[in-house]
Each structure stands twice: as structure tokens, then as C-alpha cells.
Amino acid sequence: MKDRTILHSDVNNFFASVECSTNPKLFGKPVAVTGNPEKRTGIILAKNEIAKAQGVKTGEAIWQAKQKCPALVTVGPHYALYEKISKKLHELYLEYTDFVEPLGLDECWLDVTSSLKYLNKNGQQIADEIRERVKKEFGFTVSVGVSFSKIFAKLGSDMKKPDATTIIDREHFKEITYPLPLNSVVGFGNKLTTKFEKMNILTIGDFVALKEQFVKDIMGKTGVELHQKLSGELIDPVTCYYEISPPKSVGNGTTTIQDIEKREDVKKVVTFLSEKVGSRLINGNLHGSTVTVTLKTNEFEKFRHSKTIAPIQSGEEISEQAMNLIDEFWKYDKKLRAIRVRMSNLTKVDKMEQLSFFGKETKDLGKTINEINQKYGKNKIYVASDTVSFINRKNEDEGFF
Image (tube, rainbow, N blue to C red; front, top):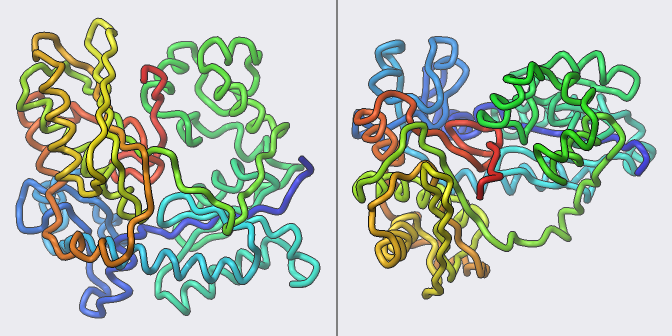
């Protein structure tokens, strides 16, 4: 595929930005969106730039954040509002091209190659115009990367924040990106990055210099494709917005740094993962009728079981069904190092069916993680999937699943 002019637009601190732009009382204050602002055990899901400047970090407990930033204002998430704003952003992008491919609620690729002539603008000018329009029409900022491929456009949007346009062209992409650490790229999570670091492969340039067969032996076909993209050889297309198919399944997996065995601890992990899966189903107007649980022991034995149920969507229902399934086949007699929850057989949900969900009290996602961390020590659990995760936005290596 020939070089394209591709933009990657990423809303800076999306959840917090939406809250601040729709609530004038929050203007000029340090703000964080949290799992449950009523409880000190909740965690920070997102924060605005003012809170970030005072040391507030995504994924930490509310009480930790307020130690660093006593004036921090915490608000609960409003997922229906985020989805609404996300769709309006898509409408803005579609004024420039039909080739708009969302990545989560807050990110989109735009292929404007065919639009350059009739807009009489280049990629940077379009990116700058979009940034200014978003500020004026939505009250928050986006960072935009402009490049000849999707992977480098996304790297560009990540390089300068907030409110910036970054150009990574064919002529200079190596000198700009090859010195960057491996985990700058979606696809290199903690586990995979650590594996390469042990081999002294630290940067994108180090990875590109590897032989493809070596990469294939470690990462399989996906690794080879990633290698070709970072080499500038493979350019995958931006999907037309009107041709995007719903996902066949939605899942989340996690690896616990310290093994767990008791049912109560398994349930805490499953609850957390189920809330994440439920959130993604809601954002996609989907519900699922097959739940699958995968368990991996500390001896690398893998157990996967599924069952078909009545269609469900909420994290609470998914968690209940997942635990019922685990109870059917697991005796809690072996130590676990990894758990994954997945929903499949997905169908679209009528909008009216979703209203009941948004009327419910948001569950405290942070409590689950916090209780495990209190028992086993800090940072004993990290998310192993999901490009829009509020703990780690980089995809983790999921080869063991």
C-alpha cells in the first residue's frame, strides 16, 4: 500500500476533559474522575492537566492523590455522556473524510489522503484546524499525529501533549521514532518489554534491527507484522467509518505478579475484569450471550471454559456468571497467575435497553484492585489488555491466552 496522509487524534485526558468542559464549576480546579468518589478506596480513572501537574497519577488510590493534591475535586464517571461526546467528535472528523477509525472513545485515525486536494490543505493544516475546532466547539484539547501510516501517526499523537500537532514523515521517521523505548508502541506491554530488555533490546530501533525470524519465534505472526509496520514496509489501511463491523468478542485479562488461590481473591480479580468488559460492551451498545473464563496456573497449565446464557451487559452480571462458571470446574486447589474474562456472541442493544444501566450507581472499580494490593503488596495486579485501560494504556502481551 502506498504512503497515505493519516492523522491520529487523541483527546487529552478524555474523561476529565469532558467533565470540566460540561461543568463550569470545575474550571481552573484540579479534577479527577474516580471509580467511586464517596470511598477512599476508589482509584483515579483520569485527571486533568492541573491535577497531573501536582503529581496525581491514573490508577492510584484517591487518598494517595489527595495527599499530593489536597484541593483535588473528584467526580464519578458518566459513561453515557462520554459516549455522546465521542460520537459528536466522530461527526466532526467525518467532515474531513469517511475513513475514520475509532480506537476507544477518545482516539481516532483519519485517512485524509483523498481529501487534500478538495480541502486545499496538507496534513498538518488539517490537524491544526481540527485542534482549533475541538477547542472552540467542545472546550477541550486533542493532540494529533500526522504520518504516512497508522502506527507512526499514533506515535506522533503520543509524543507531544497536550494540544499539539506532531509530524512524522517518511524522510525523518527513523530519527524521530527509533530512539523511543519499546513500550511507546501499542503492543509492547510490561511483560513483553521486560523480555526484550533482558536481551538488551530497548528501543524501537533495536527491535527493527532484529531478523524477522527471530521476532516470529518470540511473538509469532503478530510480531512480524509489527516489525514490518515499524520498519515502514507495511501500511495497514484506515477502515471506513461506515464499514466498521462490531467486534466478535470483548475480553480482558490480567496477570497477578503474586499468585492467588483463594476464591475471595479470584472473585476480586474477576469482578475487576468484568467491570472492564461490561464498560466496553456498554460503549459499543452490545450485549453478549457467551461467557468464557480462562485460568492459568503458576505452573503454566491453562484451563478455558465457556457457557451460553441469556444476553447480559453489565459488569455485575458478567462477574456473577463468570464466578458461577469458575465454581463449576475449579476446586481452588492450585495457585493462579493469570485470569481472563471474555464475552462473545455479541448483539446490538436497543438504546432504550441501555437507559436502565446508566441509572444505576457506578461500581467501585478501584476497590477490587486496592484490596488485592493491600493484601499482597502495592502494584500486585496490572491490566494485560485493552488500549483504553485507565491503569496502563499500552496493550500487554497476551500470548499465554
